Amino acid sequence: MTNKSVQALGLTAMLFAGAALSIEPAHAASATGDATVKILRAITVTKSSDLDFGKIVPSAAAATVAIAEDNSRVCGSGLSCFGTTTAGAFAVVGAANETVTVAIDNPSITLTDGGSNSMAVLLATTTSAMTLSGTGDGSFKVAGTLNVGANQAAGTYSGQYAVSVSYQ
Amino acid sequence: MRAISAMAAIALSLSPLPGHMAHADTRKQAPIVEAATDISFGTIAASAAGGTIELTPSGAVRCSAGLQCLGGERAGLFYVTGPKDYMVGIMLAPAQLTNGRGESMTALPKASQSTMVLDPGKRKNKFSVGGKLTLSAAQPEGAYTGSYEVMVEYF
Figure 1: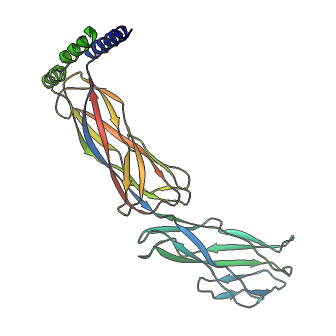
Figure 2 (figure 1 turned 30 degrees about the horizontal axis):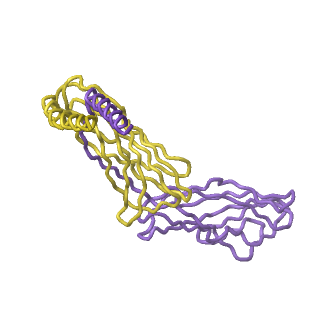
Figure 3 (figure 1 turned 45 degrees about the horizontal axis):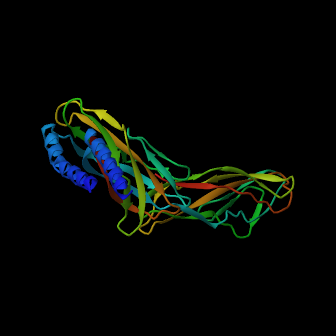
């Protein structure tokens, strides 16, 4: 029995040897290529102040209230304006020394008092592009012009707008 | 016992084989492959969610949602020189790109073709290489580089 087993193993080995002889092995030439990519950190935009038109006493005629980027206010004819005003402001963090573009997604928005009363606001920024600092920081402001209707209903009005900052 | 002797005989008859095969390949003038252009995935603005960048072998790049492809992409290029009508297979190994600060990402290269039949003459056969790059969530910024191996296999 032992002898037969050994003989069978020998036959198997011969068959494999025969198969190996019939196939020419593959050969390969090789080279090395390089691959590169530059990754910039994701941009983050954070609101640092709301656009605030302050307090306004309407009149019998429609008029506008404008807040400039320096927080100053121009109160339309017939209106009374008081209280603190601020321009909208945003802080940007991204890759150092990279140029980014700034856009207001919805430059025309509507403020509402939570009910049926509303006012239109036009938004603008003088910063269409900027170069981030060596630490990747930047900022920009948003000015607005509020359209106050004749005998605008009293109340607290609010609305939202969005901005986009992208690498150029 | 006789069977064991037979196995030993087979082993002896096989031993000269590798040398003989190598000699045959020399006469065939084995093809060579040379790198001509590196792959560049260009500049990518990362996102908090990560994503993928696909560079086609023809050099077009596409970023997944959230990422921003900012240009500068370029496909890799290789030349193969070898005997006329040789058929070769092209295989690529993944590349690990690192930024020198211990952060890395993996690129999977992809060739414009998996096989080619060679034309005779130096650098007469070329293929290009694109690839797919995967960015993790909040991939750290930096200039990443790495190498990948290209093998041209022939029979």
